[in-house]
Amino acid sequence: MVTTNVNKFSALSQSIASVGIATGLAVGVSLSIQSNAHALSGFQGAYAPANWTFTNSNADGSVNTSSAPNSITLTGGNNGSGSSGTTDYTIAAVSNSTIAFNWNYSTVDGPSWDPFNFLLNGTPTQLTNSGGAQTQSGLASFNVNTGDIFGFRISTVDNVFGPGVVTISNFPDATAVPFDVSPTTGLLMLGGIYGFNHIRNSRKLKGFSK
Image 1 (cartoon, rainbow, N blue to C red):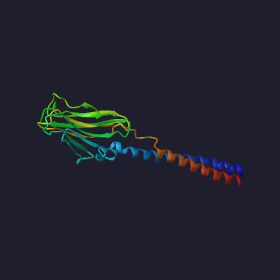
Image 2 (tube, one colour):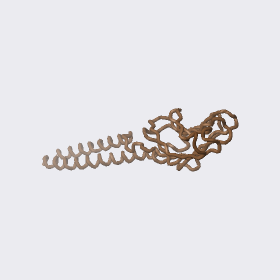
Image 3 (cartoon, helix red, strand yellow):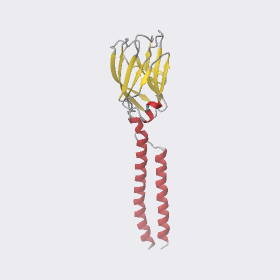
């Protein structure tokens, strides 16, 4: 009788273990995917406009977020001062990933006077062609690490004769890792293991009592 009960329990326990662990992993990974969904959705979630920092330095630029999450429009300085300035829109990266986006730029001044830049930890990389047309566009991508401060800048050399204007669209966190071992995942797995051990011990005691 004991041997029969133990064998029955062994088959049952393996089934419970498989279902429990599979369920725990599925739920954990699902929550992990959801936790990273913000990184794949444009200007929303962790990258919603409210989480960005807008900064003018000797400039009167602006940012228009009314088209978010699809796009935002950054306008550089034109305060008439005759001296240089910058208009920045920045945020901290939420994961190790590649940030990709389309940009459409225009200016009534020459592009050499109001260039558009990508910013990474304070270092600008110019994306517009200083010798190019007053209207330009492109696709850019940059690697970032968690916590890096990245974003966009329109510089102005003289703050006169019109600002540079750029619209950023198709902005995802292009290669954010969709699966991670999050604290939630770990807790769910531990809960599944605990539940399995509890059932196993309970069944074991019942089997040996017969």
